[in-house]
Length: 426
Image 1 (spheres, rainbow, N blue to C red):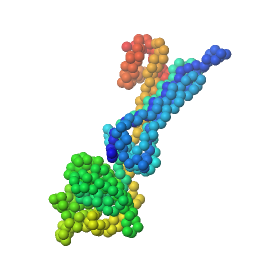
Image 2 (tube, helix red, strand yellow):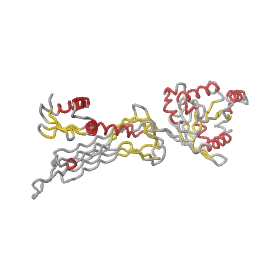
Image 3 (cartoon, one colour):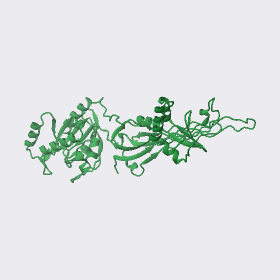
Image 4 (tube, rainbow, N blue to C red):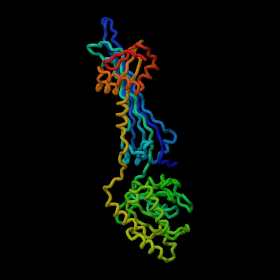
């Protein structure tokens, strides 16, 4: 089964918690803190494999979670780092953030490795919180949560040339006649349900990779008839060969067919519509020496190179492919890559910045910590009435008060934020 678009969920591992322990040695009555740090959570990586050609494996498995880091322990023992997860995808896979549909990265080379999410940082053990004033801290830092994302994976085929046109215009026959590809060929709608690739070797010693894109129909740009699934595979191409049934064997007008296909391309993507295009007027062997329609097409499209051909009879193919091969050389240095629009680092920074840990340290003592708390304390003057009112608002807006109440805080219990301690009153 050929699958070229899937949705998956990925999550980096959480960091392990730091330990709050103390040295307990026979001849050391007042041992200091020796809590080890938590291990870092595992990260999420993607890598391309050229022998993978479809995203079908993600139909059976679409949740990927890296391993959480282990907790720290006494004796300054560091928790075990969580195992990374490596997700293998076909070359040409574009990773998007699902909600915004914005591109995160374009994996368009073989063995290309990309680190999508970093694991959550392990929490610090209590040894890091010892000061001259507090020599026996009974608390440690909790590990940071790993970031998570809902993704769309889209496979956009990598080919130099894309064959476009209505169903049964002869694209598969043309590919079969010019390459070693063996596409399914028959006379009914949507014979080609998957893109087929083949290498064209020309008589002038040049070669290029050509893709037979399934036939388009009207409103393909809206996704009708799997339009989006088909059109995404020509987005990377450097050139388009527009195959037209010039004999009108399906009862359609070739002139109208050309306009309809070009309209679908433009409505789907302005960039795609700007790609160089040639017209391959196929099935000339069925015209019975009447070339009126060919002349009409040439007159209506004076800026487009026109090649009358017969894929079945192998007529005009050398001229077509020699021209295409030379044109492609002009675009050799052009690499069709989808630029990044969604930045995961901003998501991870936001997660780290907003992280707040609320916990009950012991009876009547609660600890509130985290970057957001440190930042707030840094710019707030708590010696003023206005500053203290801001602190109260902060505790409420960040859900800290609610969390303290869930943990069972009572009036006159102590709450510690950094070096600040105050009594709780409802």
